[in-house]
Picture 1: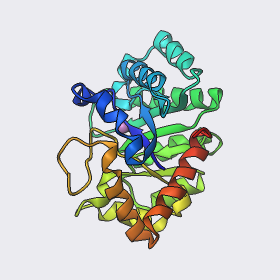
Picture 2 (picture 1 turned 90 degrees about the horizontal axis):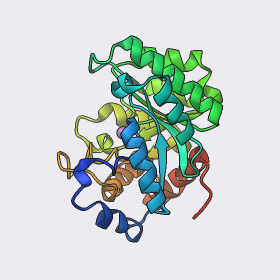
Picture 3 (picture 1 turned 60 degrees about the horizontal axis):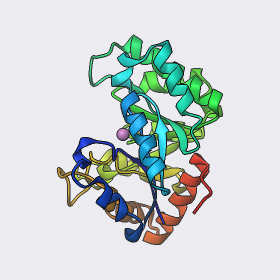
Picture 4 (picture 1 turned 180 degrees about the vertical axis):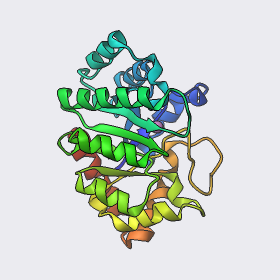
Length: 257
Ligand code: NI
């Protein structure tokens, strides 16, 4: 089965057809989905979806651009959510310097706190990192992220950087960008890292692969990503599905069917 490791079905882009769409996943080969929190509100919504659908799991976390909403009280609430039986990771967390708000200092503060939260609750992390390669890596090294584990989602850095994360024991999240004409860097990443370290993801509703680039993304587009990875790795389509499913199950510690 295809394991979709990163989607946002709580997004308003799915308000008109969320249930119909989710109910069509399994018959289309998408066996498991992790819906990823990006704020306090979307963490709640992710957990609700996971409670409603047996094949949906949730991640609890606050995206770097939303960290201004965190304080001791909301952070304590976030910690409590991590003990829900369908929460499988802390995420998405990290650094995003593409936007200036909140300040780098605030982003770093809550990135550090959420890394330590993941360690305390023994869950992997889902890392979001944009235009912040050095600070992200340095902070993860300083916090011994190799002991925490997780994935660098929507990987946008160099093949060399990807290899450093693999050495740290991390997985590399590969999505629609790998199908783009200007996605050369990510193709090099896929070439450089072992398939045992690759996770399939869409980041729906964003980053739709070719030939649907620019449209709303859904997990039903994952086959385009699989095809591209199979081509780069010179593997069969089914082999890519099988290995990446096992990778995701290992990372999220999900053993149910
Ligand atoms: Ni995301």
